[in-house]
Image (cartoon, one colour):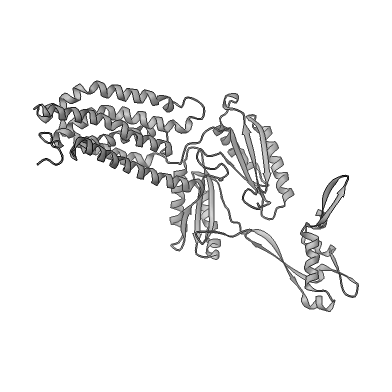
Amino acid sequence: NRWLVFPLMGGIFYLVYVLLPLIPTELAPLEDRSNVRVNASAPEGASFEYMQNALDRTSQYVIDSIPEQFATIQVVAPSFAGAGAVNSGFVNIYLKEPHERKASQQQVFGKLSKIIGGFTDIRASVSQPPTIGSRFAGLPVQYVILAPTFDSLKRTLPKFLEKARQSKSMQFVDADIKFNKPEIRLTIDREKAGQLGISVAEVARTLQLAYSGQRLGYYVKEGKQYQILAQVHREDRDEPLDFKSIYIRSQAGKLVQLDNLVRMEEESNPAALYRFNRFVSATISAAPKAGFTLGQCLQELEDIKKQVLSESFSTALAGQSRDFADSSSSLLYAFVFAIVLIYLVLAGQFESFIDPFIILFTVPLAVTGALISLWYFHQSLNVFSQIGIIMLIGLITKNGILIVEFANQQKEQGLPKRQAVIEASVLRLRPILMTSLAAMLGILPIALALGEASGSRQSLGIAVVGGLLFSGFLTLYVIPAIYSYMSAGKVHKMGEE
């Protein structure tokens, strides 16, 4: 019954509208690359030795708790792009090959995520190398808050972080800017220093020699060259009161304690100020919890933005989050461009603007089948599955081409269009089934994720197989029904009167 085609197409469009919000989105599914990283940061003001000892304990804990690992590498104050903060570091955990261990990389990640909260001396997070992008890019969620002034950012950021840490979809939520780095501001009493005959430059030079670790020169011992560093011992420079142990000689030759010449004020300030697009900025980083994707995390951050940030603030994305947003818009453009290109090519081949439009009615069927398959098998809408949907445009339109082309030939022989399209559907059933089955069987190994490192491409195979299976049968009904409505009574070529 051809009158059912319009309710059917309306139901298909409604089904697409319902399914799209239900399918999680992300940049790309993670592959098992036998690598997990523990990123750590100590309280602001922590020393290099403190961070090194903390990472030593973390590495030993990993070695004792994760039997799947075979090597760990730890780095304190990483400086791949410049000087790194001494209170930061990471432990790179290399796992055995997948066939040599019982637990997958995702299971190891989940285990570490649960026990990482037991580290009270450092703030730690766990990450996996992304399928697309740099493995040193940090956590997947990178949400940048752009503020008009530093003071407004300082007031608003704690509220945003509090909301984000209550999220049901994110873990390891943190910001790159901290306002609690301890500092000591020294003010020289110039009047007293002048009375004692001590210059400001002399006070500054004494402080530099005592605390800066400046290299004064080298010496050679037993054929090896060593640096000469000027710095007091660790136990004499850990506390602010250690200023009393530093003396400076006056012009009269007397030794004066340094704390008699300086006034000390303790305060806290951010270790660094960041800018993004010329705005004062703070980057919120996080990782999705188990069962959630990058797209869901970003959507929740957008909801928090509406609750916390005023209109004077703006936001942006960085790292993997920006790659995810860029790829989504680019693939949507590629999808539309593919449809337009196919329409123009078919219009030239059929010498008609109506026949290609009839053929393109197979595209909604294929997209719906792909979305149903992704939803049913708990797959995400990512770069690979979107590429699979674009592939479907070319794979499924050939069914419509077979029917419409043969129906046009039958009309040229004098058959009515309804009888012509029915006969075309019957006679072209075998070629349609053969080509569809060949395509589905060829891509089935990808859908079944056979072979190592094939998990990230599984969504592509599921989308293609599901789209072909769903649309392959409906095409035999939809295309003849649409053809009987839209096609001319006789073959009409472009340019004919």
